[in-house]
Structure formats: C-alpha cells, structure tokens
Length: 353
Image 1 (cartoon, rainbow, N blue to C red):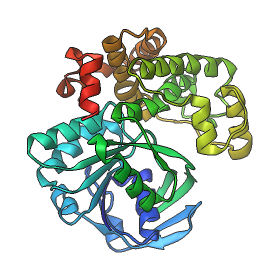
Image 2: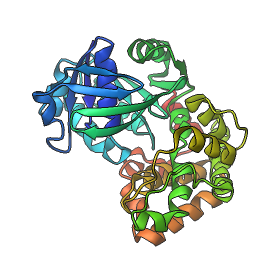
Image 3: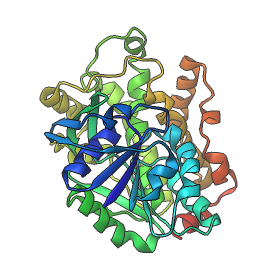
C-alpha cells in the first residue's frame, strides 16, 4: 500500500522503517519544517528489534502526502494534532484511512467530525499507545526498542472496526484487537498518569539536566501517586460504560513484565533495560503534552460524568505552579469538541457514530 506518515520524530521514523521493511511504499512529511530532508538522498536505517535499511520518499506538503496515500499515519505529539489535521483535511478523499498513533484528547473525533462536515467519507483509527517505542539517533537512523505484543484499536465509524483491525494487523503484524470506541482508546493511554507524577517528583533532576534512569526513580511512593491517578482514569472509563486495562496490565502487555505491583514492575524494567533515561529538559513532553492533552482532558471528562478527579487535579496544579504555564489554555481540542456542554449520553453517541 501507499502510506503517508505525518512526522519525522522517533515514532514516525520507526513506523516508516517498519512498514517499508514489510513491503509498503512510504512517504514522510515533516509538518514543522525540513526535518525529513536528509531522507531525500540517504536511506533510513533501523537498529534494535529491527535491523533494516529502506528507502522512503519525502513530501513537501500535506497535499503531496495525501495525494496518493491509501493510509495516512499521524505520528506527532498531540500538541500538533489539530494543526496537522487542519492541514490534511482539505486534501483527504473518500475511502482513505487515517491512523492516529497515539491518540489523546479525542483528536480522532475532531478529525472525523471535521471531515464529515466537508462530506468526505474517511475512516479514522486510533491507538491508545504507539505500536513501537524508539529513539531517533540521527536524521536517517532510528533505534526501535520495542514492538508491543498486543494493542487495541478503535474506529470511527464504529461499524468499520473489523476492517480497521484487519488493516492494522496487515501493516504491523498480528497484534491488534478491537476497542469499544475512540473514548476507550483515549483513556487507554497511560502516559499522562505515569509521566506527570514521575516528572514532578523528579523535577530537580530534570532542571539540572542530570542523567536519571526513569524506572529506577519510579519508587514505591511515586508509584503510589501514579496509582491514584490511574484509579481515576479507570473510574472515568467505567462511568462511560467501557473498560481499560490497569497501568500494571499495560506494562505486562507491552514489555512482558511479571511483577504484580507498579513499583515492582519499575524495578523489573530497570534491571532488564537500564532505562530509558528520564527527561533532562524543563520543556519535556511529560508535562507539555501529557498535562494539557491527557490530565486536563481527563478532568473535563470527569466534569461530564461526575467522577472525582482530585489526584489528577493536584498534579495539574503542581505542574502549572512549577512551570508557570496555563495548561488548560494549551489544549486546542477541548473548545472545538464542545466538551463543556456535553453529557455522557451525548458524547457516547458521537464516538459510536
């Protein structure tokens, strides 16, 4: 298939290498500038769980990316979802599938509703986490550290769920199962509940640019705080009539861990992997992405469903205090999705369309 990938970061390059190695024709577009230019003249190499050297094309615009694509994969941080979707929407056509990897803050619903307003019939698929974990080593080299063994995927329209599962299994290998709807995918994402406390309780390490293996510093008490946020995430899912895996189940399915508690899992991962290193930049996405598009989104859902989000709100407050940022204002999806005026029934009808 012809696959267009939005992004040139680690997950985008890892996906490009993985899919090209499986025989698909890949075109990459870097919406922030010329970060993919080196791939015009050099192959993309992958190391880690995949060793490969592949050729990919580079698109100069959203229009050029979408023109011949059967499938589009959005692999940028959620802060950029609305902007790249707005760039893509005028160039999408009936029959295309757009995969969001990974989806948060119901960006999939925004894309689906906006394209419907233009009488364009696309399918939007959502992962709650990425298929691959990776580190970008250079403009032309990516190290793929993990390919998750099991993932859920949702579909808008919902009745195309079986086709979406089949497509994703064809692209990435047999590892996908259907999720109830896009809200399930959004609440599957455990990054916000893990990253917020982990960053805040290790903030001096981040601010001083120290090297710190993040699982080693996911100590018993930090893990306890993470678990409080995770309990609120699970309560949200239950309030909307769906189920999501616990954070322990996420790690077990992603990395084959065997410990039954979060701090034990962190110890196990540190012993086996020795990393990855924690962030060393105060602009880390652990707060810049995961607070506005994860935790603040969860609080918005809590208001709709009447779920107590005290632990989540505490982390949001401390993140705003330490960074002096208005994270609520940084989420550019809440207002166009009109979540402030929603009900549980109303939102479920929209994601189940």
